[in-house]
Length: 315
Image 1 (cartoon, one colour):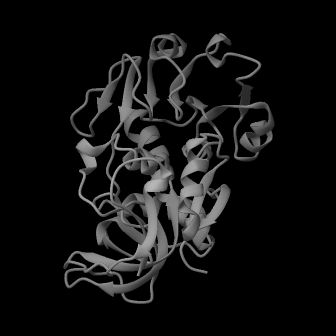
Image 2 (image 1 turned 60 degrees about the vertical axis):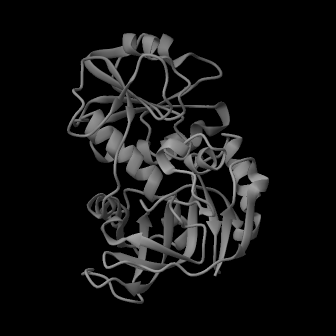
């Protein structure tokens, strides 16, 4: 099978598309014939060696945590899937393995793909939307009618965070650049702030949750804009925050937390339910063929993507 492979850490040029053996599955996995894969910032951070302590340095390495495709094989212990099923998944196997024509994925991180999404849209969703869901639900403990500020409102996580916060009944303020304000409104933001024209932390307003999806805010400043029991969440570790570990970390009033979470099929089903109800959709920035994986990573590294970047594995 063809896959985008790296044999060492480094710039985008270390990735090569080549032929590698099709992965074998264990009893708890499914083999997915990948049609499309999502590209996320964590991918190039792994590629550059930033996260070797977490993901190791065993080469050759195949990146990619998001996939949409067709089940090709089913492990002996797996119920609920059979060959031919159309699925989407957030892999938690090694560095993901989805930049390939086939990926071995743990069955408990796979769900049926909603018919309302094509493969590009489905591949864009898992990691980013699950990040938004887990942040708002587990760390933010978001309740109906609470107020949420989403910084980076039209980025890969932000486009889902707006929609999910609205689905949870919140009042949402989106922060983005001037030309992205209309998209933030279309996604459901009740209020928008152009960060080029105004500092979102200098408006005099307060929020129950500040979700910084790009890590540009300082917790020391953001905490002053929180309600007494509010919380600051970041996807990029910044000064003054703690790592949030589900079931272990105590949420403190006006505390700041870096989100840690684990993918589950149950959470994918929550996303799929909203999709079927017309309450959640993907925003695609760009689509690249597998052969242009380097270009896809370079686009991601600009940190200017409007929505998600997708890698098309098969037509």
